[in-house]
Length: 183
Image (cartoon, rainbow, N blue to C red; front, side, top):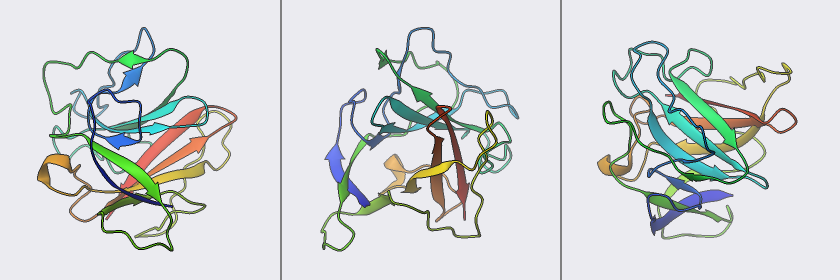
């Protein structure tokens, strides 16, 4: 399924979206980049059958913190379930996109006038080669969940190296998630 632009959304909408604020459980601590120590930027909210994946990446020093790597510590994909509410956003750092974009699944074989901003399916469209991450809990290959383009415009874009794609993976049995990008 294609993920197409579906207009704007409220910052804390429980819909498939980029931008806004993450919906998190009580006691959530905003993730910091392992390389620079700054708070990461919230990028995407992906509802699951049960719960949600929240994707974060460091944008404090783009290109210097290895935010493209699934294991370097400059990005995080977190799985949440249970009662969720809008997170408190840290005061400093590059923590939010400039706008919130709702996304809607759209059949791949059907024309659309809306900008295509991603993909959900059985396999990612790798730009450089397969980098499917292993689950940190069970070491199995994680399942592909979604792929994102940088964004429709400057306000809605994450930096994936200029024309890159971001990839989200999920290990359902362990409720672990991972994110990486390629250019």
